[in-house]
Length: 224
Ligand code: ADP
Ligand code: MG
Image (tube, rainbow, N blue to C red; front, side, top):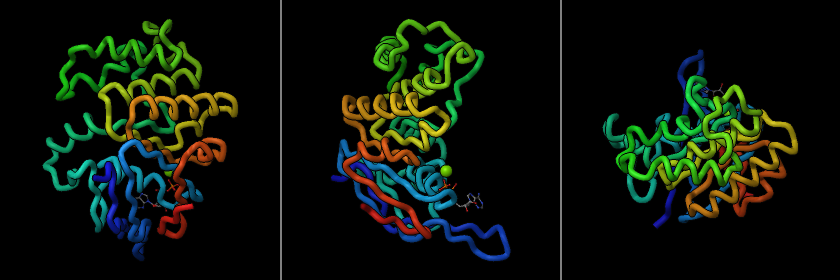
């Protein structure tokens, strides 16, 4: 069974005078443990596609299946739970909560998780160790560098053992060497955790690590 399947996913907006077709029948299939990099010009629908896969947005038509289930067919509360447990997100901005410590930020997704909070603090510490921040647990986000904040965001995305790790330009706000480190880290953790990784990126260096690469152009998805 495929871990992630998109079947003729289309997305359009009716806001302006004419219909804007952002995605046109995008089909993709990823096996468990696979990694896919998505590239494409600005405005080509990369974020839209990632949001649809991440169940933050709905397709206009087509189907998304994650481990055989169709999240878009779930009720809103069911979907919220599914999203929190099965999907990890890393965005261009870290979206850490400024009033919380590093450790607390990583624990946020465990509060509502079906897994419960048993062992959550231990898992958070272990992940923070793996991203090189084991000595910064009690710091606030403002006390960290941009790269360090993004590493906290990566640990937070992984806390609930998501089957799917979705990253939207995760290194887009970082300088070259820092971006490379965070990219390598994402990739290593994906390997170690055995999740499916989908990363939208402008970085050739990062895309080059992936066994599968797709490009969005004119709403269509072309796999290299
Ligand atoms: P990318 O991430 O590749 O830069 P996006 O997925 O953010 O592109 O956007 C793709 C296109 O969809 C853009 O033309 C954008 O303006 C349009 N778009 C995104 N969200 C909306 C929305 N809610 N309403 C209307 N148009 C939108
Ligand atoms: Mg985008």
